[in-house]
Amino acid sequence: MLENTDMEYKVNAAVSLADFKQLLINSTLGDRRPIDDDDCLQGMLANSNLMVSAWDNGQLVGIARSVTDFHYACYLSDLAVSASYQKLGIGKQLLRLTQDQLKPQCKLILLAAPAANEYYEPIGFSHNPRCWVLERDQSIR
Image (cartoon, rainbow, N blue to C red; front, side, top):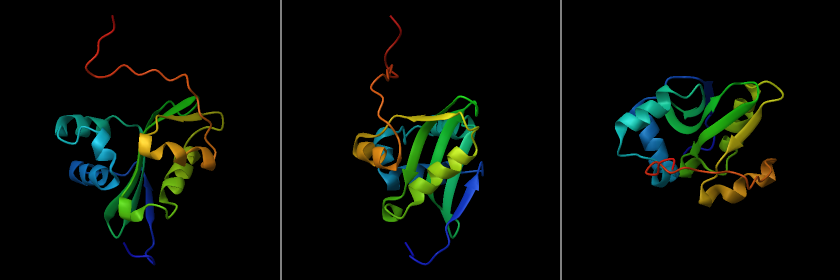
């Protein structure tokens, strides 16, 4: 990482499968994402309707990937920043730019990875204990 580089942020720019997979690995989010399932990863990219990305000299170093209606709810599926670029404000800027794309009344909602759980409250998120998850290997009973 170079300290004096100009980070370039892009909204809804194309992100290759290879770049996305490498970013997930470099950010440690790869431990919680299906990095060995290219079809799933490609679907994640193709079906997100809001992606804000951070690039350093053409290298993808951060992404905020969301599914949203832009008016009421924005579900932030991934916030990933390469480990060597963390603590430089990139994640916050990705979140700011994501929020800038939304209507004023639209909520930003996410599930935090355990390692990132403490990140969100200090930057303005409130904790909501009412989340429910149906795992991929479970069916509705």
